[in-house]
Every structure is written in structure tokens, then in C-alpha cells.
Image (cartoon, helix red, strand yellow):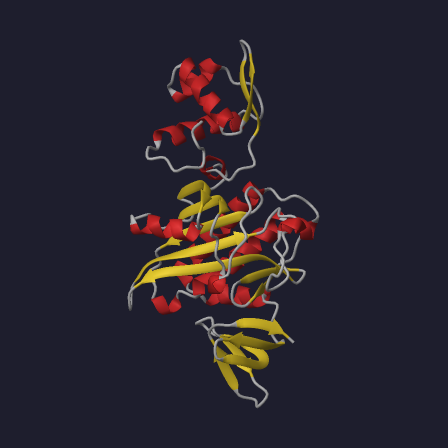
Length: 337
């Protein structure tokens, strides 16, 4: 059986499969004769049968009624390119989707594609990662079939000094997607964690390839715990972790969530390129769980304690310390006191 997740060098087959799926979805569950499908797609009835078989091999349930035709009954719970393309109408993000059954890291895979010239907005999604990474080199647990592991290649015409702003953009997009697909209210913890009820459900790892004054590409790495159950989390995590399923008590449609996320990323990125960072910063601040809180920030050189006074345009944390001075922190782990 051909692996449905592997990228294919030719685009003829995926396009034909997407067109066939589009016909099925447009029929609202009704039967489509092989003759009609063949006429619309300009292929023989034998070719129609082969395409139907290929879709069945990929996990689609397609019923066949003798002398009447075919009907799409159910789609697989898999984040394949063809499933995600249906329902997306974005400008940049998601213009190309690469779906993988397994990879070491979607960020690494995305960087390889970027080096080969992948276009702005290319999305890489994997069902599982063997070497998923979080911030500061921490391991990101990536069991198959329950979560979202994705990386987005963008080529923004901005200074490398402003690349951190894109982490904030990603955080706002993830928060919006959670609100669109669940009844949950997410909060953002500086710099790159998404929390629900005080527990981490998503993390971001944005990396770039740049020279002194030029960005070649930025890879927006996004991991979201969607339907992961409690016994799948490893012991000894740095902070309490959870999933959208655990917090909401209901299974979340991974395809629906991914489409919502890609759409929000596209909307925010388009606005960012047009209007700059100010609106994203304002929404990030409104969603932050630490504004005005007394915190400890731990980093390589030690700790600093103070009250959160704000975030500057470079995404640095502004702390008001006990002596009344303000300290600018660019990186570290935040603990609310």
C-alpha cells in the first residue's frame, strides 16, 4: 500500500484524489455513479475504481452500490494533505501542505524543505515525532494519532531582530484556534506556552535561518496536545501538562482544529505584514496570564524577581523590581509567586 503521508514527487495523483473527494463531499452523502465521476474528472470508469480503491487504502470509508455508484461514508482520523486542503481558503499559510506519518522533528524537516526552496507558507505536519523538541532543547512527547505536530515555513521581509514577534503571533493563533474548536479559555504564558486551567496544552518553538540583516526563513514550530490522555504524559515534567480532551472532557476533531489554526495563522500573518506588530502585541497582552503578577524569572545567570509591567516591541519582559527600577528580560522561565 502506498503511504498516504509521504510527500509525492508528482502532483497528478494527489490532485485527482482531492478532486474526487471534492465530488463526494459536494454530493452531501448521495450516490455518484462511476460514469458521472469519470465524465467530470475526464477519466475512465476503471480509473475511477482505482482512485476509489486508493482512497480506501488511505482509510476512507467509501460504499459501493452495484449499478448505482459510490458514496463517501467517513474520513480517516489522519491529518493528511488532502483532508486539510478541503476547507482551507488561505492566502499564504497552507498553500502547500506536507503530511508525514513519522519524522524526527517537523522543524528539522521544514528546514530541509526551506533549504530546497519551499515557498512562503508551506506547512509540515506529522502524526508522530521521534525527536520532538521544545524550548531549551527539552523533549516534546509526540505519541501518534492524538495531537498536532506542525511547522510552518515563512519568509518575512523583516529584520532578524524582530523575529521573536512571530512567536507571539503563533501564540495568539493557537489561542484563537482553541477558542474556535472548544469551549475552553486559553491563556498565554511568556514566552511561548499556552495554558488551560493552569496546565500546559501547547508550546511553540520558532527557529530561523538568517544573516546579520536578512532572514532567509523562519520555521514556526507548534505542538498542541489535542486528544492525549493522562497516562500518555511522562512523569517528571517541568510544569503540569494537559490536553484539550482532558480539560474539555470531549474528543476534539483534529482536522477541524488544524484547519482553524492554519486559517488563524494566515489571517494574523497577513495583518502583520500589512500593519506591523502592534495589534498582535495588544491581543497577546490581553490573553496573557502574568500581566501585573509578581514573578520569578530564572535564566542562566540566576533569578530576578519583580512585577510584570509589560512587554516591549521586541517581546522582552519588563519587570518592576523591588527597588522600583525596571529590568528588561529577553529569555527565561517564569514562575508566578
